[in-house]
Image 1 (tube, rainbow, N blue to C red):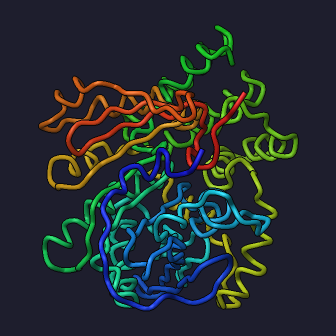
Image 2 (image 1 turned 90 degrees about the vertical axis):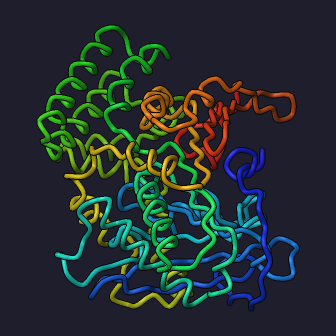
Image 3 (image 1 turned 180 degrees about the vertical axis):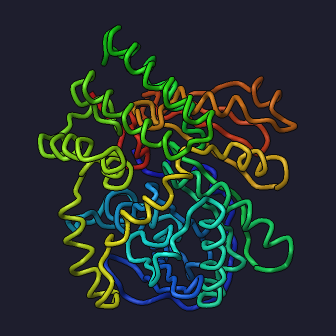
Length: 432
């Protein structure tokens, strides 16, 4: 199954422009990269892979921005080498990569993620709006450097917490365009397994696990009690406390499920990753939360760290005083008070106040941002075409005579259910 079957299905517009290709980086094709100083002493890193499609110039294909989750996970690392870039973490070429179809721009955000860094602890972002405005400044710098992409159709695709960041970023970028402050051809956003409404995920964990036979009645009840305590803190606007209780709920799930994989309920957690998570939760809730949301539960952390701080750092001429991922814990911690806040309103703004396409996709086997929770927050959206979308026929997505998912679409809004896939929908589908 190709990566484009579900995620790039909405990338249908193409435009032409003249301009030179980039330079040689890591992997096939031409690349560009660099830093943008978005605020004083605050530097964000981007890495562009020009498409390897059979075109005269890369500007003949759309530009896709990829935003990772966390907050604090690196797009240039995890997104690139573990999900959709041309090479994997072992520097072996992938059979399927988005770069074969479109230009892909990886951005390390928020500041402190990946190769992005700040010189002053006071400059870390503390909320979603600050993240969005930093991204706006980065795009100003990017278009100054590669002006040919100003007219190219632009899409933003995000995963997990990246979806929360993308919703506000895209809305603010749209407003900047309308105000004449930036020139770009923004077309739409895709939110994958996105952390849009945290409490909707928390409340659906217990029934999801119970209905899949992963916890018993006792486990269901204990998890629901933890969810209720998280809700109480949330209702009291104790968002830091709600984040800690969210992490505690996850540790309870690990206990009663015998260490279910939060990213794919059918995947066995390695003993090493299991010990990493258990030790982290014992240390403190935030550390456990960091391991799951930023380090992907310990997956490939060591080889990826070696790659990024070795050949990648050398090839891209990263400053010697910058170490990939060094500031990510601080980045995550500074956003702890914003972590549990929903951004349903921002998705509504995209539907009510813009003309952009909005795509939501969810993996069937994902626990951390489970499908039932996604369905719940989608049902809370209000926009003029909600009734027509609700009445639209839900159709199957069939590949080689296998139903790999479903989709429901009306107007500018689409929802995709992806079968046999976990949190990283674009990585793989689980086969029997």
